[in-house]
Amino acid sequence: MDVARSQGIHVDTEALSTRLGCAVVPIVAKTGEGLSELQAAIIGVDSGRRSGGYPLALDDVIEQAVERVTTWQGSGEKRYRRWQALHWLEDASAPLEDDELNAHLVAVRDWVRERCGEDAALVIADSRYTHAHTLVREVVTQGSSPRASISDRIDALVIGRWTGIPVFLVVMYTMFLFTMHVGGAFIDVFDGVAGALFVDGVGYL
Image (cartoon, rainbow, N blue to C red; front, side, top):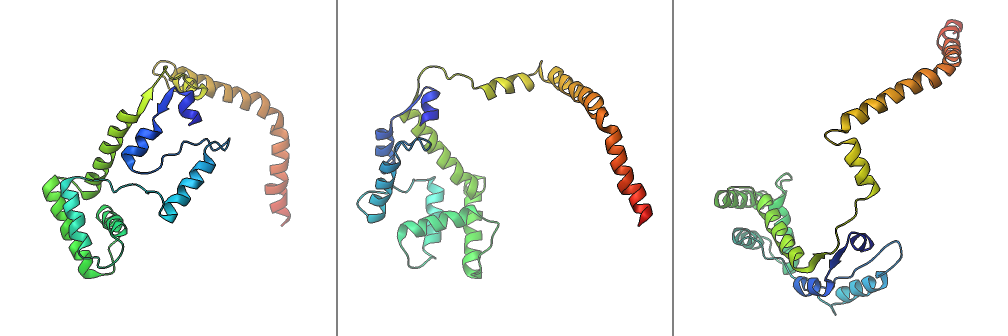
């Protein structure tokens, strides 16, 4: 939150908490601000006294795909079965050991691709990012224009369209001068050490 404040960004944490269905705790880790409140919120969720949020409603096709997968999962808490089903739909790189379930997953992924024209992972990501952008528009306000950091200013100089190449040439020329003048003073030392090791030393061995 300290970074957000320095950039003139205000986050309505109460509104965000309402929309997410869980506690939203602003913190500043380096000063400890909000850490005790965060710990209390975590304990509250773990003990069941507070809500840990709601499952994000995704694209209709994905919701149908999740339902198809969860019917094959058997027992287990519903929210974890949903998480597992989404994970399986997103990650097609690691086939499961259960050949029957794996074949079912492949068929569901193919069905999603036919309906949406792209992989399930992309459809899921698009739903999540769309929801996130909507939340940002509702709960985040930008105050005064953020000031460019020193790093941003340096980046603008060294990779700028008109300044990047001149700066690069100056840096290379400076390195060349440093090598010739400063490094040159040690040439005799390096030459003597290298000769002793790799010429005289090898000859002696």
